[in-house]
Length: 559
Image (tube, rainbow, N blue to C red; front, side, top):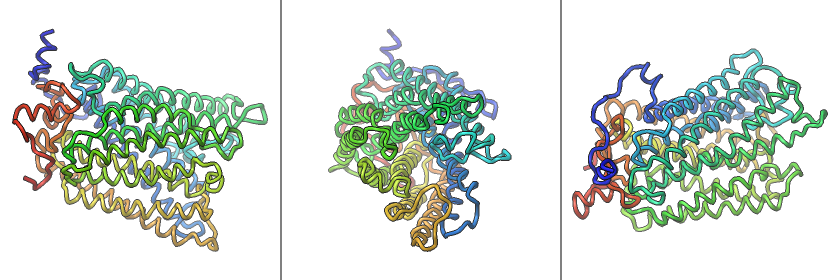
C-alpha cells in the first residue's frame, strides 16, 4: 500500500541507477520495451525504403508504353513485394514499434507485461521479413502473385519456384509475431496502468492500440490458417483451393479478406490515435469528445469484421447488398472522429509546427481516401472500377495519405522524447510540402486513369490509350516523394547530431510520457504525477505553476 500511496503523491517510483549498457550485444539481447520499440521502428523504416525503391522502378516502367526497364515477370515481382513490404513489414510494425515505446510510458508502467515475449516478437518479425524478401535471391525470383496471393495464381501450377514458399513462410512468422505482440499489449494495458488511470483516463493512443490488438487476435489466426492451407496445397498435395479436386479458390478470398479488410483498420487505427494525441496539444485544448473517440474506435473495430466481402462484389459469390450496407455504415464512426478532430481545433490556439502540419495533412488526404471508399462500397461503381488504378488511388490515399502522413507526424512529435533532440523545423516543413505535392501528383491522376480503364498489376499499356501523360505526371510525383523522404532522412541524421536539446516536455504535452526525461530512464520514471484526468501532465503543470503554467509547443529557435 505504501508503494501505491507514493505513486499517487507523485514521488519516485523507480531506481535512478542501472544505466543502460551500450553496444551491439545489448541491442541484440535487450528486453527493454523502449529499445525493442526502436528496433521495430528502424527495421520498419528499412523495409519502407526498400519497398519504396521497388515502387520507383514500377513508376519508371509505367512512364511510357512498352517494356523499358523490366519484363512482365520482374514487374509482377516488384509490385508483389512492394505491397507486401509496405503492408506487412512497414505500416503495422511501425504501429507496433510506437506502441512498444509509448504505451508503457503513457500508462505509467515500467515495461510491458512480458518483456521476453516482446523481444521474441521482434525477432520473429525481422526473420519473417528477411525470409519473405529472400525470394529475390532464388533462381525463380521473388513471389509474383500480388500481395493478396490469390488462388489459383499462387498455386504450383501457375507460380512454381521457391519465391512463393518463402513468401508464405515469412508472412506466417510475421503473423505469429503480431498475435503474440497483441496479447502482450492487451495484458500490459489491462494489468499495468498506474493507480488513478482508469480506462476512461487512458490516452486515446492506448485505446487505439488496444482495439488494434483485439482485431489482430481475431484476424491474424485466420490469415495464418489460409497460409498454412496454401502451403499444404503447394508442398503436400492438398487441394483446399484447387477446383479440379473439389477445392474452391473463392475460399482463399474469404479467408484473406476476413483478415485483409480489418487489416486496413489495423493499419490506420493506431495512427488515428497518434493524430488524436497531437491535435489537442498543438491546439492548446483538451480533446473534444473523449468518450466519442473511444466508442467510435470500438465501433470501427467491430464493424470492420463485417465488411470483408466488399472486395468480392465481382465474384458473384457474396451478398452484395449486405456488404455494401456494412461498408457504408463503417463511415459513420470515422465521421465522428473527423468532427471531433475539427471541434478540438475550433477556436484553439493552434501552433502549426511540423507534427501538427502532418496531422492536418493526414485529415485532408485520408478524407479523400474515405470518400472514394464510400464509392467503392457501391457494387455498380465497384463493377466499373474493379482492378483498375482507381482502386490503387483509393488504397494509397487511405494508407499513404492516412497512415504514412500520421507516421511522420508521430516521428516529429515523439523523436524528441526518444532521442532528447528536436528535429529541424525548416527541414520538417520542407519535407511536408514536398510530400504532399509529390503524393497528390502521384496518386490523384490514378483516379482518372482508373475511370478511363487502365488496369492495375499490368506492366504495359497501349500507346493509343491516352494513358501516358497522366502516367508521366504520376512518375514525376514519385520522384518528388523520393526527394521528400530524402529530406526527412537528412533532417533525422543531422538533428540527432546537432539538433537543439528537447528538454523533457518540448510541446507542453498532456500524457505521461512527457512527465519523464528525454530519453526516459531504464525504468521509465523517477516520478509519476497523480492521475486525476486524461491530461495528467497538464494538470501537474497547472498545480505546480499556477494558472497558465507550462508553455505551449516550441521548436528550434522558439522562445
